[in-house]
Amino acid sequence: MKLPRQFFQPLAIGAPAPMRDLPVRLERMIHFVPPHMEKMRAKVPEIAKQVDVVLGNLEDAIPVEAKEAARAGFIEMGKSTDFGQTGLWTRINALNSPWALDDVTAIVGAIGDKLDVIMLPKVDGPWDIHYLDQLLAQLEARHNVKKPILIHAILETAQGVNNVEAIATASPRMHGMSLGPADLAASRAMKTTRVGGGHPEYKVLEDAKGDAPRAAYQQDLWHYTTAKMVDACAAAGIKPFYGPFGDFSDAAACEVQFRNSFLLGCVGAWTLHPSQIAIAKKVYAPDPAEVAFAKKIVESMPDGAGAVMIDGKMQDDATWKQAKVLLDLARLVAAKDPEMSARYGL
Ligand code: GLV
Ligand code: MG
Image (tube, rainbow, N blue to C red; front, side, top):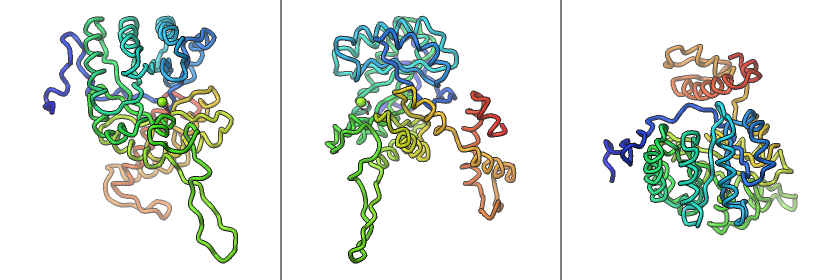
């Protein structure tokens, strides 16, 4: 085991020191762009103003014959766009693919100083993170990159779920994790062809009462994994995200899937279609009525201790902390979004 004092040492001479804390950033949506398509690249400067993170996707959904064009397109888009406060990420190809090594070396060499996060798919265990961690340190040193590039793992294999805690704590480069319901369903042999969301056959049936029709309630296929991921991330001080929702025609189901993850502790989700951006903005910001109540709690317990009653509800040190979670997030949203700032009164 690596000793604690070595954990924050740079892994290559000349590489920047790893961050002790993650940058405080609003990351309600990670917006996926296919960078091999010139038409899509042309929209990036406008999209970057509307989203928290722009991600150039090099992995699944990019045709094999377009892998190199996607990599070159991402570099071009990184060079030519001013992303301002918006994060610039890429999803590289899996480490066992023929493209991963060139993805990392070419991108860090060309735009290492602009790139915030590398999303790594199909992470099975901490060994995958250690490999990329070392490679990034070598490349940062070679190209004189000043700010460490962070790693975001996709949780999308059964083995990865088994090792989720070790993945979360594998390196100070870990930014967070996203649940990948499509690959994970395949890896586990779940019987669904959907990308996220529920399944009409995954349900509980009301008890029988004679011959009366029995109500059936659909259950959440992703509850267990999301909760497991949130615990691993929160314990490690990194950020959990819900991943993709594939049915672009069902905005209501997308909203519910996103909201379940938000309520359980996730900070954002992927947006694969422009229509999902507004959904993520709505979901991954606390409700103004909840924020108003949270403000009341914090104001009535200035030192965060003791017990008070508000509107018939007991408040104490623990509810003060719950209120602070909502208020801290509301402040972050308000700082970026004047409309939400007015609705929160912050
Ligand atoms: C995402 O990559 C997924 O497999 O769901
Ligand atoms: Mg996947």
